Image 1 (cartoon, helix red, strand yellow):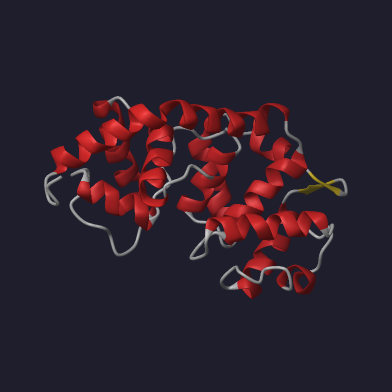
Image 2 (cartoon, one colour; image 1 turned 45 degrees about the vertical axis):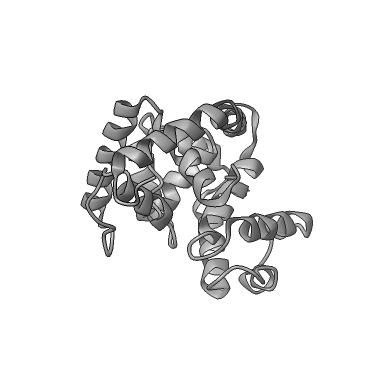
Length: 220
């Protein structure tokens, strides 16, 4: 494969998609089940995961969420208690506070009601805007990731640096931007959506496919 030839990268991507398509579909169906049959606990776990992930390893973040659930701290823990269980999460002091702030935001009549709030939005993009505006520690990438993981945002792009690097290789964008303002994020997302349509790979599949290409596994 020629390093700087987008056509070669596209052909390779299509090849591994043929191999992994059914596995990707199965994973996305699992995400959809969280919305269809899951409860507020299941959905908030995914939000916690996405609050933890910036500049941290995904598996370590999910392990931290699992620990918080086991210790009954996800919904009841103080920032200090939560922080002690984020050993492998970078910026754990801030992220413990972000988690508690998010928990308080979704509190309704003494209980966390994430699903009720999300269901009030008919448009996933509008819901994403609201999440970014109201939850500290959540940007467009994290909000998109969260909504995808609970089956509520399959047409939203999760633009982390791994994905952006692949978009450059594929000729979708010219360079990795230094930062992503809302306008730049949406512009890049539109370019990714157009590319997904062109190569006939749904954008939700494309995200997991590019992650598989980077890591060798389909995770979250």
